[in-house]
Amino acid sequence: MEKYLKIFKALGDKTRLRIVLMLRVKPMCVCEIREIIGFSMSTVSNHLKIIKEAGIITSEKKDKFINYQLNTEDSGVREILKILNKINNEKIVKNDARKALITDRMNIC
Amino acid sequence: MEKYLKIFKALGDKTRLRIVLMLRVKPMCVCEIREIIGFSMSTVSNHLKIIKEAGIITSEKKDKFINYQLNTEDSGVREILKILNKINNEKIVKNDARKALITDRMNIC
DNA sequence: TTTATATTTCGCCAATTGACGAAATGAGTT
DNA sequence: AACTCATTTCGTCAATTGGCGAAATATAAA
Image (cartoon, rainbow over the protein chains, first blue to last red):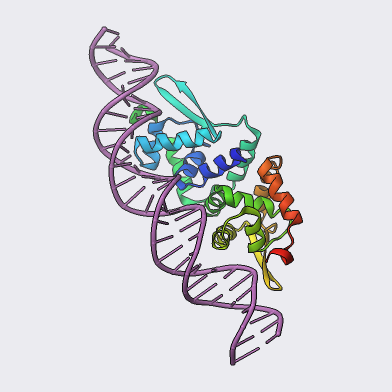
């Protein structure tokens, strides 16, 4: 129960849901996500922490950066992500995904 | 996105998650649920409103009472409910389900 | 070892949430 | 028509949340 409560709490916030959805495009670091959604570093970092503690994403050091990526190891999370695949056609989601594609951390971080 | 945000918000609260889980046993009215979870009528009523507006449950007048029941019409909701079926073995969930079974509205409402 | 910088943590604030009891509503029953 | 009672709405309050910038941390690079 606690596990799913954390997952639902994490996804019940619009900013965090957007982050999870845009991580479908590719793993990203804090400043890339910050660039896409426009909130401050600290806000993004805090959201990532909540999503990570819910088990939805994992983090991995890569050079100077920490890559956050969807956790496809957990079967419960996979099922949730499958449901999230229904969310694709909304303007804001498409736009985030587009930005994620063209965003290059070498230019903005 | 808005639809799933509402669903996740609804399920991201422990009391509301408990209510949804116990409605798997049978449709119930406000006072039955109140009896099981121990919160006030107004609190239960408000939670039910939020869950209903998320599309997870529907309501139906039956004699003097309003029965709240899981909305199995919506396929998105059905998938969520399928995931919730993983939540079964926790003490509080079992206990709520047990109470739901033995609770008779004719005795408490 | 010092510097640069990506990330996290902290303290603050405004807005939202979840609880309550009391009052209002509304649909059967008398 | 008046009454009963299940339910909803309202106002209040404490706790939580989500945002921020500044300071702290940690890790690569020089």
